[in-house]
Length: 330
Image (cartoon, rainbow, N blue to C red):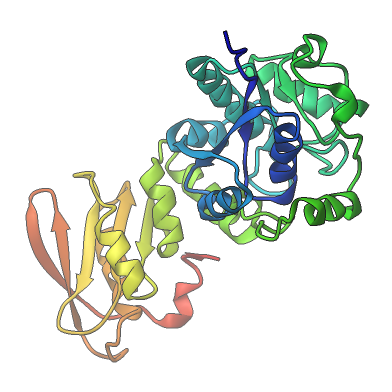
């Protein structure tokens, strides 16, 4: 009988470290499957392209709903913005563990480098991530393995520890040399593309969750597809910035409690009013949407309102643009 190949499931972000981790294991004739996780907060396109060019099989797994719940209430808190890195990594490893079991694989691996990121890649943080994952002892970090406790796959001889690495810190010199060795040219920049680390996006998300703690994944997409205005302490208005935003917003309204707004007869944005509102808030929302249209500031504008009970119109004067900053979250 032919001996079964060792198989590992790895987190592939599209960054250089995760690609190198996979290549180090492939050098040991280990069968690797990369997993890239889809959420509203980052794009998997680079991960898929980089892994494919590097000869690493990859699968995209959507964890949007699970991830949003963790963003709302992280056990280990946030980084400098709304990024719950430890909880996020724990979730991804937990899901990777489920895939490992389904695939009959032997262990999980990541591209984490000891000491590279101050919040999520300290020794204690790595241990916390393992506890959250529920797969303690079978998570291998090939780039820093020689600096970390021996894992079960190493103890069992599934991986040769001597062929693993001992990289630490924020310098990228060793990784860049390895990239040349493996011929890796396509990968994401070290800064990453997670929106939760961005100050402006985090301000909008924080405000959204303050007013709408039960916000859904589609509301996160609305933040990405338009301006966010806070109307009082209970209502949120999303306003498109261009034709692409308008088209996207039109696809995101599904709740009967939300109102769609559109200026009639004049080029302008779409609006979506969410949360708690009354007639005064609806009229204010219409005047804000009108202000972002091509209407003359002194003209009265007709705004179409699409509600659960049907379509109606309201005629408003565009709000003074100087007042918009009192509602707009930047």
